[in-house]
Length: 131
Image (cartoon, rainbow, N blue to C red):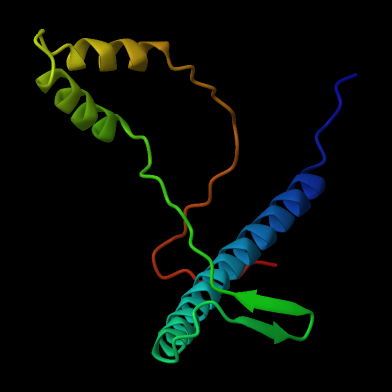
């Protein structure tokens, strides 16, 4: 006796997935907007602190404090940036430039993982609402 798949259950699962996919898209858009607003205010606060020569101030707020910190950001290590750096490295050395061979070796040694998932493709003019 073969078990018949419950199509109602599958339909419900798909509706729920689509609902949460839409919710995630909406929340991500809101997060982008909030980050942009926070960045605008941060820039203004830093400008004022610089004007007042108070960049070392510790500002007490409800629930904590705010201070100016320095963040160190390192350039992402991409194949393009590695290629540029390796060419510069070999330009300083009295030997042949092996950049292409090194990058080819690194690319072939990278491990790839394949996983299955769902991806939503919106129809042109379709709203992002799902229930």
